[in-house]
Length: 226
Image (cartoon, rainbow, N blue to C red):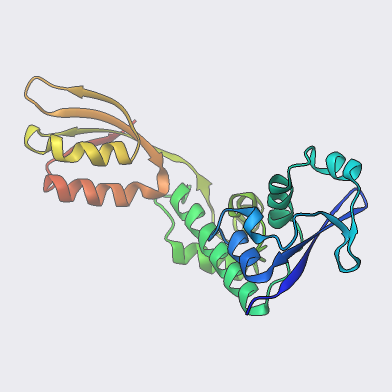
């Protein structure tokens, strides 16, 4: 059975606490549920939850710019101290680690070669740099600081791939959905029925894009960097 735990959050020296269901709170911070009210055991903001001492409405409004308990709970669950088990924290940390690796691999290239970095290479660099993952912090918010640390070990550059592709008439229709998926910027249907299009997407997806495009066209496609 789940138990009730206290979420703690500090703003300018003032303490704010919530009584929440432990399992539901873990589900919320991991994105498995999205209703902050369903997490609460009491729809109250406390100064000291264990003593049942409520926080003043003036301090609540000053700290959160709202008295809406759902909005307040969302902030506290995402940025406060949410008690979780060691096992839950390890799992959440690993999930966040995978998200960060995927973000870097998708958007980055090796500035020396222009080729994408495989996820394993990025993970190895993070291990070598002894990167610490913050389980409750948004993955995107951690990327910049991590890049600065691993860039010493692994040269990385965030970039976009901008390509012009010309697809033969007999393949054009079945490739159109792929082009839209990867960021179709413009299209021109030529007199012979072929399609000339420009696409832009994160550079780390370039090899994946080429593989899919070549598979659909049997290699009969022309591409050039813009």
